[in-house]
Length: 290
Ligand SMILES: Nc1ncnc2c1ncn2[C@@H]1O[C@H](COP(=O)(O)OP(=O)(O)OP(=O)(O)O)[C@@H](O)[C@H]1O
Image (cartoon, rainbow, N blue to C red; front, side, top):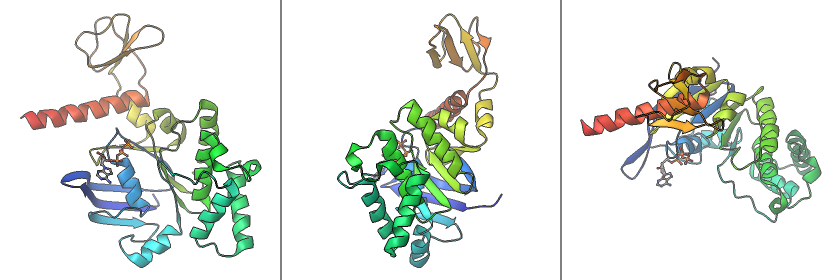
């Protein structure tokens, strides 16, 4: 695999609490999904990669640059696109004005070239007809596409997207998926999300983070496979099970041991993820009580 990002022994603490714990990971071209429960360290990892946060320990190599070196960090910032979880765009800017402003920050100094670049990214995310609209008047989905547009200025080869599909409706999500999958054909895209459907639809690889460590690294089908032989449907509620819920059809879906009257069901990515995280949490709890 060609490697865009190499992470070795990455550590980050807030106070005495480790948030990234000796993390090792290589990321190559295409779309990699990053899953993990709240507080797993996803945003912290993405911020370290986007050079918005310095790690406490370990080494990073991103597009051939070492972000711990000031001069290389500056070069790197010209070459990555980052969509933070909450970009906080200025609401009174127009779409064009905001992108022009970000392009200035990205040191596109020639006005004519810069405007051409702004128009190019607007076309790319299908927002050209909103160029004069104020940011505050955009829908959630349009705002997310604006977020991607600012990432694309100066054509970076690495895109870091932190929960880009939060709060958008199904139609916009489809549109957004089409955009991301197109972008992933030519670049390395690292995408943090809580949406296992997005992972299934977009990612050729998925990494699951828990307590700042990688607990799964493989294909979405491989993550679903973690639940193979452990997903059951039954008409009665399962006795003694901890991971189960009632489906819209009234049947119970149970993860784990076969309940009375349970028939096997095809595992989904969400099943695999829930079981994996549940097993790691149970192992951590028994290690603490031992
Ligand atoms: N600046 C900070 N100061 C102190 N603690 C922080 C800071 N930023 C994050 N944390 C803590 O570090 C842990 C990891 O946070 P992080 O935002 O990286 O997780 P996450 O996996 O992105 O979670 P979510 O899915 O909720 O966005 C959390 O417990 C969070 O409260």
